[in-house]
Image (cartoon, rainbow, N blue to C red; front, top):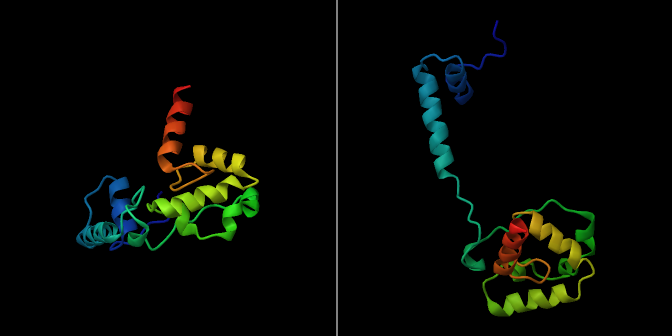
Length: 135
């Protein structure tokens, strides 16, 4: 006996039809089409934005204890995600005086994060990740 049946006319109902290997009813087909349209309207996430002016939201990171001690907590976050050489230079200078730069580098190499981390530009971090994988 099957339990927790999803009602017809919903996306879950459409998925239920598929899991039971039966033909979906018209309301479920319409719900599936609406779900696909909603997914198409959601903004795509770009890995490295072309400029800060085009981006209004910065990434939300899971906070670690060491991040509270980082020198970058006191400055503009835009510096670390900018394409401007002046702002990048400011961000790198902040990293030079940081007490937790080694933990920051470990985090940057293990996560899929964008921007400047541990005083390294995104291209430098990518290079280090490739070298670490090949070693």
